[in-house]
Length: 98
Image (cartoon, rainbow, N blue to C red; front, side, top):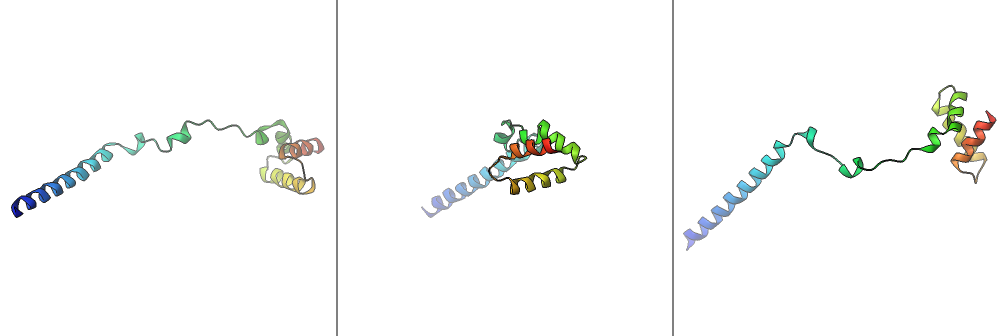
């Protein structure tokens, strides 16, 4: 009776070790370059950021001689002074001024 119990327990442990050993082998066969990470993000198309690519933003960028930090500083200053307007409206107003 005790011998049968020890035999069953040993078989269980051998099966458990074999399960984890072969499961680890499956992951090693998959090279990292073929593994797709965050597939749900890769299938989704991101909408274009209109406030950065519009004609008015381009005019501001030309006025700042390509310095995006200066353009953002102008926009933030205008947002503080002109409350109640959207970012796009403020960009258009600044482009008309400059």
